[in-house]
Image (cartoon, rainbow, N blue to C red; front, side, top):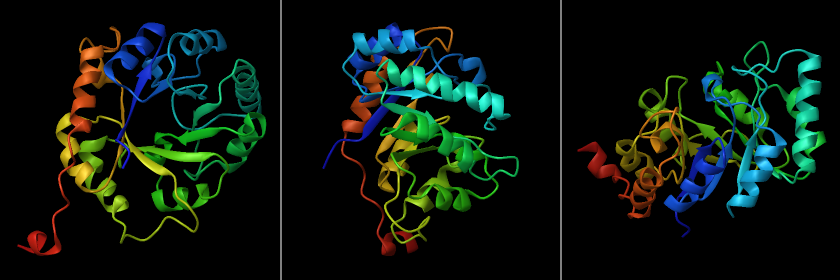
Length: 247
């Protein structure tokens, strides 16, 4: 069985090197965390790619929020996506809702047409949807989608813990036919959340502020990442049996 995946948000080469040193498996590359992470430049991507040998998922997001905007905004984002592809990016983070809070399939389709054969994460737009199940069903079968980044709630993992556990339950209703993207937990995630999440079978985790002891004004700390790596390399607790849960 493969070890749990640890993804770390990086803003630049310094962050990327520290995350790699600490034991991260993958990077999410963004800029402007004051807006919760926007599209980085191709030059930043190229510098990070040259500095570390980790997979890099590049954020495609033009502004704070989860609505892409008008046609011109989508065209600009598609142009950014094309430049990043030309620079060698082949993994991305995308996620948009329409005005009704449903998955914005036309915007996703336009971006995927530009991106071609890539792997990608649908990010925490899911947590802001009025109907999570409807969004998950709408996403089923989109080419390249292999990860859903979610805290279970727009308010973060504290509020979404039970949702995450319920959605991870193999006996729970499925989100739709066919193979499902791997859930990756992120958004206010703390070390003390891990036992319950891992006991539920969740095995992919995403950290940002938790890797930065001095906050977003400071860089990723390799030792902070290493603490998470050690925690995830510790065998997961067993899920409680039905008898134990009833007692």
